[in-house]
Image: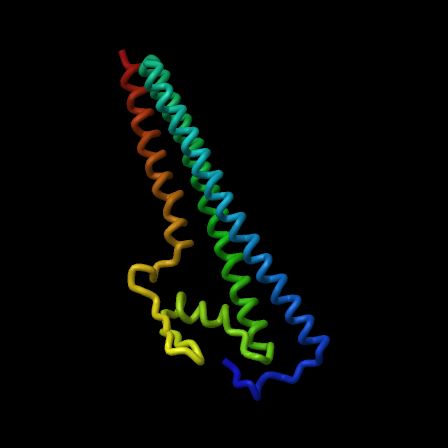
Length: 181
């Protein structure tokens, strides 16, 4: 980080513009996070509906051929949904990373010691212990929290994709066996 003496002197207008940009980026970061949560909810709901449709086919005691073909068809749709979910999640994670870097850049340019995003990055990404000035408090991320939640959430569409692949393979086998005389 640059020393305070290394930060160029800013006019009031430049400082106000940076603060406005900082606030806009915080708002966009919050908006991106809300969208991520809404998308996750939507993708989970779609997968739940597909699994419920498959369960309904089981309850209806449909002929095995129809059940197998339905399972295979639903699995193709489920796999496609999981693939889109993964792509959207990766893109959203990159938006969040960009916003954090942008906010750290603005913090570094502003005199007065704004450090929220720089310290968050050091603590959570670089795993550096943080000591808070004027208090005896310090923060070190605990071992079980060292994996990013975005990385963990990114695994969910992969796991559901594996489930849909398994359902599709089983559906294809059931359809093939039931169609064979």
